Image (tube, rainbow, N blue to C red; front, side, top):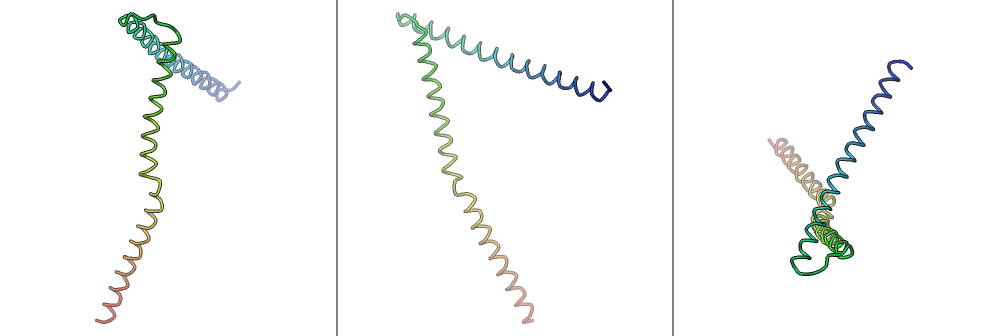
Length: 115
């Protein structure tokens, strides 16, 4: 194996190592986040003199995901409405501006001919 192949192999190993570390860190963050949500759910249920359950916790997570989706959908709808006609509007504005510039140039050329 020559130096170039060795360096490529080393780079592949380093990339794989970075990807695995990133995956592990992200997984740990998600697990910690869900564990905190589970703890909060259990504490809330106990404060309300109710029995916490896995199904109740899953329903709470499902509802929070649904709410996040609704919020995302609302923002996406607003973005769609504000941008859906932008390309054609920009084309029309550019065409109008081009025509205006052309008219100005024609007027200037005509006024120079008259002088």
